[in-house]
Structures are given as structure tokens and as C-alpha cells.
Length: 166
Image (tube, rainbow, N blue to C red; front, side, top):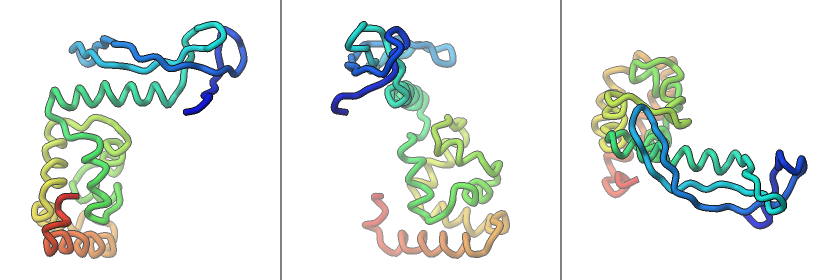
């Protein structure tokens, strides 16, 4: 970000700001987490400025620490699944017997339960496991096209073991 600009509530105008790293301690679900956060400060008055992108990045670092401590699948691994198996977020949710928006919420950053995390981790790691779920639960899908597209992608992964690393 060269010459970043944001609104300063003290100066009451858009100003350039500097980003500083600091160690932050936060309680999340009754547990203490320490991480390096990035905060924006006005170059005119030195007041703290809210920058959505920085806040989002700080939350991601905090949530990643929580996921790691509690052995919850990473957001990156969750986001690989629909692309890997050529299936939409809603059809995947239905395939798994979850609410239609459940997988979409996890894809957008919500924290899955430990039980759902294990299912997603197994799906991410094993196309054979995913294919078995696809065959077993195909009637949960609203269209045969979703089934066919996902089955073809999964069979392609199984036929080409070097593609499994993705």
C-alpha cells in the first residue's frame, strides 16, 4: 500500500496513515491469545484509525491461532474444497446434509464445529472419501448436473494422483 489514505475521526478528514505492528493479547472463548497485529495511525495527529482491511487481517491471525490450538481445519483448506471437487458451496452443504448456508459461512470465515471440521478435513485430504459421500448422498443435491460435474472432477483427481497435492 503506497500512500494509504483513510478517514481520521480526530482530524475529521481523509489522511495518510502509517501502519505499526504491536503485540496484542485477546480473550477468545475464554482463552488468551497473543499475536502480532497491525494498526493504522494518522500521520497528522497520531491517532488510531480504523482500516477495515487491517482489522480483517488481524481477525484472521487471531482465528488462525484459535484453529491451530483446537485442531480446526484452516480457512485455506476449506476454500480449496469446492474448486477441487467442482461443486458449489450450497450443493456441497446439501450433499453433507447440512443447512444450505452452512458451508458458505465456513468458506467466508466462520468457525466450524470440531465435528464438521473433521468431515471437511477428510474431504479435503481424500477424494475417495468425498466420492463415497457424493455417491451415498447424491439424492440430497437439487440437480443431477451438480452431481455429474463433481463426480467427473473427483474421478479425474483419483485417476491422476499427482493432482491430489492441490
